[in-house]
Image 1 (cartoon, rainbow, N blue to C red):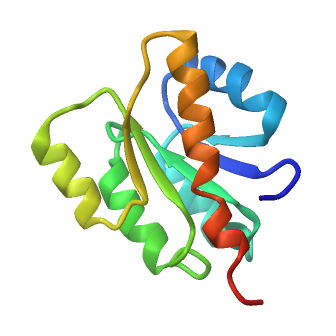
Image 2 (image 1 turned 30 degrees about the vertical axis):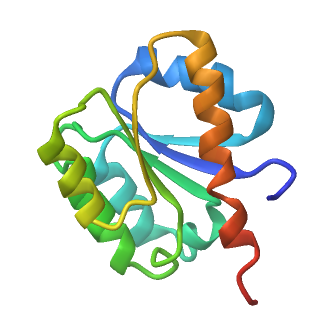
Length: 137
């Protein structure tokens, strides 16, 4: 894992974003997009964006393009096939979980309720980066 991995976060809720920033910030660099459309615009305007990211965290329920459709889009974009994608959502509904897994997300996590749960989530989330780091150049 890189010393300070670059994590992309697609999250429309400011309160959730600030909680993630406080927790992920000390151990990673965090880049935020507030919608799926904003991430797609960056993908179209920034060559190699997905190759720069070590991990992408998607909210499931976003305005406009939802997290599942966004995961599909990322998977077919250059550099997106092996990018670890974590869906971080409030939904525990089985149909949502199945849709996300069918979109080939790496992990599906329910948003934590406490600071301790969030810290544990950060550790689990950062652990998915390691396989990408060991890929052949």
